[in-house]
Image (cartoon, rainbow, N blue to C red; front, side):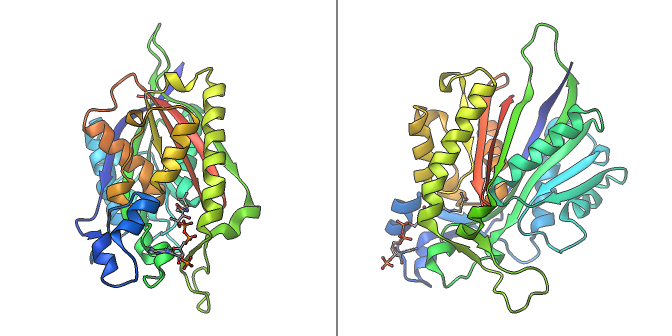
Length: 323
Ligand code: ACO
């Protein structure tokens, strides 16, 4: 049987770091308030010339080099983003061009902070069905474009960045446990759309284009829905939380991450956290966290890694991987 393995992981963060103290010099906030409520200490924000496509391509190149494959051999790019550089062409198609992958196809996925899980699920289905043999799954976001930088309730929470994984079909080793993507579960509830949204679309000039959020309500839904998603993934695979080597959650807020970890009785040293340094990079946060924990040697081959996310929509879901 075929398995869909993670053959390479990459990430990119803009060089420019903005600390809480930097923000406190322009809006009425404090480092203490932000750290206490969110765990965020700093965020990376794009500089001139950086955008969703450039960051996605940079992360993709690292993932492809790690996998040892030629950049022009990519068959599909599935890019999760709420901040495409243009309404069309899709940013994914521009990434294909950057990589010289002229035989590939690509499209963007819009599922806000759950986008990477959605994209991973779609790519896995394409590969498992035999339609393609490999795919780049990318989350790349320039949330600094969606911020009202005078709104302290939202602008302190987000950052820019990109992460990528290269998926590849491989035969399952005889007598070996299945590797790669073991399950994905996706959910959405459109009745909760007004809790977190960016108003306006391209050309709607009377709309603000800024992100709006009911933080309390998002928080209330987040821990319950994410714990449910994690339980669902464990049950579907006949596992308990004990079996999970690493939880790699979407990085929105340390209190949400801790809340889910506690509900599962998962010790904090098995939860990957980057939100303190990256803030919330939406669809990029999970692949960036995977990249970091894989690169520093925490995540090892053969280990079970559970990904979970929740975001605007509301959308939420999980993916279970064996590295
Ligand atoms: N600095 C100082 N004070 C602030 C700030 C700030 N940056 N932001 C808000 N405040 C003030 C508010 O104005 C309010 O003051 P008031 O009572 O005088 O009006 C007070 O702090 C409390 O505001 P709340 O919004 O009630 O604060 P809360 O304790 O709920 O914390 C937070 C806000 C951190 C956003 C919290 O609700 C939260 O973590 N929600 C989860 C939402 C989240 O993480 N969203 C990310 C996107 S969704 C996702 O990716 C899953």
